[in-house]
Length: 123
Image (cartoon, rainbow, N blue to C red):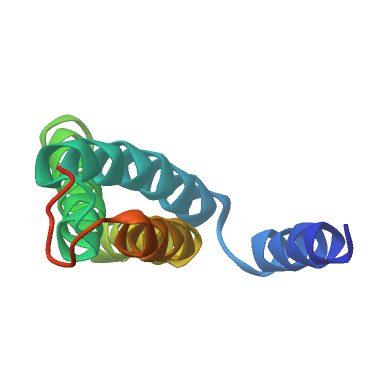
């Protein structure tokens, strides 16, 4: 509970110091990063490197699409917006890898201990 309060207060102070548009881009990057990490996780069967790459790639594609739209409609490309979107994806990728790495390690240890012979692949 303490960490949730710290996270909320930090996000409020950051949003007060940053432009509202950058905060929205960061949020969109985080959401697209979560989607990309989830898809990469399914395709790669839990490889953390692919999971992280999926988060970054999805947020980069979302940011490029949004900035291309802005350039076409408003004649304004903003590299800061693109960076905020990608930073959201990086944050999502790191967070997902931090929280899912322990689960995969516990599963690997349990499967190793339960296997009748070492080296059996349970996939």
